[in-house]
Image (cartoon, rainbow, N blue to C red; front, side):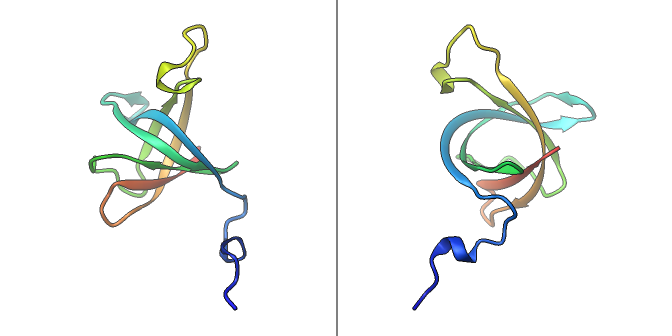
Length: 103
């Protein structure tokens, strides 16, 4: 009898599914210069998984800034976006998904 997926999980913190549009930019020093669009697939207290439509050349070890808009792309105008600095810790073989650890 196979084990449920959650018993195979080796992460310290549980992941939760989320479908949220985000912008992200590789950091050059302390500056975010070029912004890309993607969406969060899941989140945990320690990091998140982002998917995108085309490979943008991110590699494990790269630091990026993620810009989350409250309420999604059509978010409330009165709320400030949330900026998160993170490190790429893994990337899928096709380069369209990557895992982040919060800095």
